[in-house]
Structures are given as structure tokens and as C-alpha cells.
Image 1 (tube, rainbow, N blue to C red):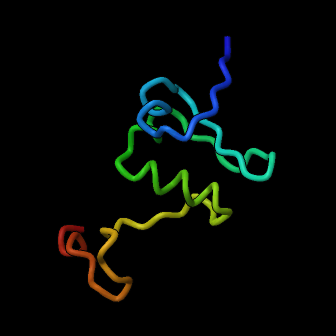
Image 2 (image 1 turned 60 degrees about the horizontal axis):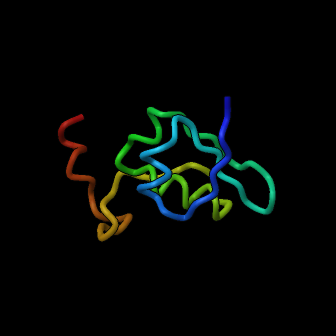
Length: 76
């Protein structure tokens, strides 16, 4: 069984969905399963897909510039 839900309320989508399809211009541009929907950066991933930028997100904090070193690099 499937239910189609359209919403801009992110907590509602994340709380009710086992899988989410991201659409742009009437076409599916991405699919996120339950594991992906539970990631902390899921909102950024969805916005990237919806904006046509692909699913690529990086792990930097929003206020960290691309030239700043990643504080977790020393842990890898």
C-alpha cells in the first residue's frame, strides 16, 4: 500500500514517511529511504535535490567556510 503526501512541513514528512521522493519540475529527482531520512543532514540533502544540485552535501557546519579545515579530519 502507498500513500502520496505532499508537504513542506519537514517534521511531518520525517515522522510519517518510510520513503520519500523529491520532485522538481514534475519529475522525481531523488529517493530517500528510512535510513537516509533519519540522517541529521536530510533537510540539506532534500533542498539540494529540489534545487537541482544533486544529493551532494558536505559535512561542514553551515557557518564554516569551504577553506576552513574540517575539525574531524584529525579523527579520520
